[in-house]
Length: 259
Image (cartoon, rainbow, N blue to C red; front, side):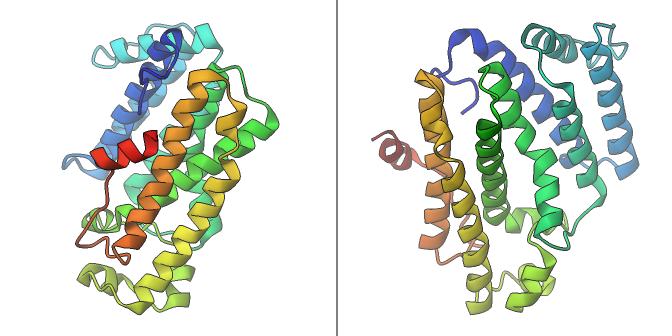
C-alpha cells in the first residue's frame, strides 16, 4: 500500500511525491519500446531535475517540473536524504543495460539502490532512522525485492533479464534455456526453495521493525511484511511454478492478513 489510510495524513503527501518520482523513473527504464540510449538520456533528465529541486532551483524541463517541484517541497520540509533518490535513479539506469547478476553480493548491491532507499526515506519521514531501524528496514526492502524477482521470473525473461544469481543457478543445474522453456522440474524447485528461504530469513530478521514503529505506521508495515511472506507461501503452494501461475494477493489473502 502507498500512502494508505493507515498512514498519518500529514505524511501522505510526501509519500505520494516519493512514489510518483520512483514509479515514473522506473517506467522510463522498463516500459514502452524506447531504445536504451533514449531511456538513459531521459533518466539523465531526471537526475538534472532532482539536483535542481533539491537545491531549490527551477526545473527547466516543463514536462518534469510539476513532479519535481512537489518532490522538492518534500525534500526541504522533511530533510529527505537526496542520495537515496540518486540511488534509485542509478539502479533504474543499471536496469537498462544489465541483465544478469553473477552472485548474491552483486544482486544485493542492486537491491541496496533499487529497494532499500524507499524504506530509508520513509524512516526519515517517521523521524525513526536509528541504526537498528535502518538495518531492519534494509532487510525488509531487500527481501521484498527478492520475493518480487521470484514472483516475476517469467515477466523478467520477456525482457531478457534474469534476477537470480548466476552462481546459484549453476549450483542447482538451472540454465537460461530452462527459464525460457518454463521448465519447472526438481532442479528449478530446489533453486526457488533456496531463493525464497533466503528472502524469508531476511524478512523475519527485519520484521521487528513493525513493532518498533508507533501507531498506524507500524500497522501498515505489518501488512507489508505479512504480504511479502504470504507471496512466498503462495509460490511454495504452487510448487514454485511461477511460469504458469504468478501468485498475487487476493481479497481472501487481505482478509487473512488483516486478521
